[in-house]
Length: 92
Image 1 (cartoon, one colour):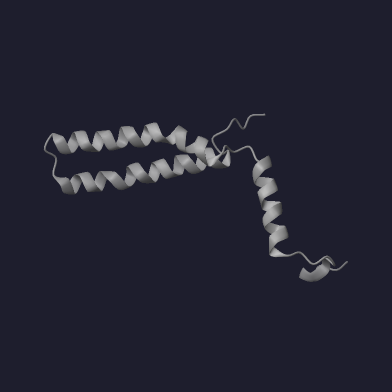
Image 2 (cartoon, rainbow, N blue to C red):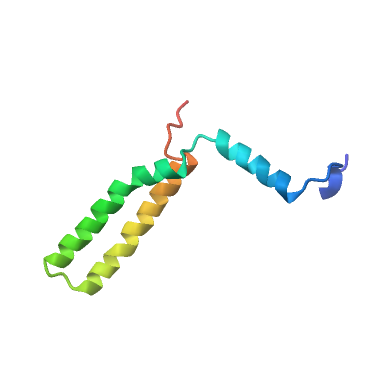
């Protein structure tokens, strides 16, 4: 048994590998980028509205800038979860 890296006699190009990745991505359980963006947009809007509301009430702007990174970080995590299918039903 040959366990070497070059055991596969067929030469595969980078283009072939990228096409395989695109095919696997199309077959995955995740949603498209646009759908994930639509799902996360209300949460980003609520977070930014909350930030504007707090700054409007007279909160020091420095605290406002400290609130913004967690809002964006959690929104990006949510977008990734929807995009990759991690947020889908995993009981089946």
